[in-house]
Length: 447
Ligand code: FCB
Image 1 (cartoon, helix red, strand yellow):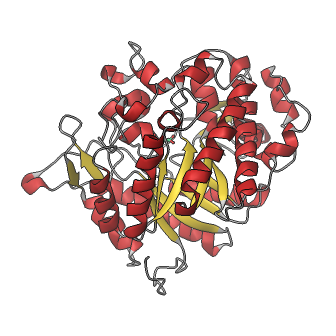
Image 2 (cartoon, rainbow, N blue to C red):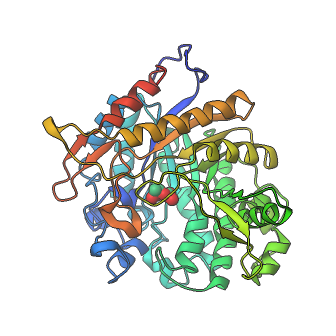
């Protein structure tokens, strides 16, 4: 465990510094030890879905090289590592008896992490749904939520004493809308009605998983991770203010209102023509009390009213530099988002569960990787966190995305977010300058 010494940089001494990854993005070994097929295996092998036809078959080879990953985390000096469990390694077809080999893998991993003094912060669902459940209807059907609760229970019972905190779902907005309406992510469907049904069942899955944890008697805190969207209005006109508010609902209130026992935002559902498959008791389950909210933040958009379009808002032109994803670099947006969330949906604790940037890093002379832009990105976003804390936002930790370059979903390996460079051809890892920067930051030295 790291010492909790007083820091000179304005962060509380018990602030948690961490790194995030996700199973499908790093593990590889997609057929090892009885692992079942996930929707991302199927999707990435469907021609035209992922850049260059790339898949997560090998990824960072972390299922094999996990000791190297732990050594990197230890060198970084982080307090906590947020990784996800691959559901198809625990239940290859998404139901029934657990696979011992899968559980053993994560037990070994969590034990070794603990021995390195690093907390396990486990995401139960980071998008790798067992394909058998998708074949039975996927998130638009209720049964998937019930299966998720069983899977969560199995994981709690097997790994509970090794895990320091739990995240039920990662960015369910992406799972629902990128997966079922826009088709950019697995399973690649294109139905708005299905996407909204998926929203309800993802939230139900979350609530059931919270209740299941409480039923085990485990004391570790549990929460959910959202990619909350809080675009800023491009002007002070009433129309633009309204447009920005409207554009924020699908990423924030649609999830947080039901979690906070305020029900679904009715005007938004009506405007989208969506009906939610709510059964008696569901809203109560969804609003089971949680211990914290996790917020992933990468960018902020400016939006303006658009009277000609049925959408509430139009993306406005801007001036910010962009990352390689084409995302505006807006550190103040993180500050604004934290303030907005803390005010409208007060939580006991908030965590930035992902923040980071892709840049086209290359290995330079002497093997050094001078990723100055990533360092600037982290520095400015961490400063935004510090400002929020100074103003009373209960932000308790920051997780950087990501420990290492990995399979960036539909972009394959073409976008690098890591503190550590990974050569997708050989799996070899090389430390970037930003790794040392983040090490110094976590150690408490004013960056
Ligand atoms: C988030 C995802 C994460 C990663 C980053 C860049 O939306 O949660 O897996 O791909 O974006």
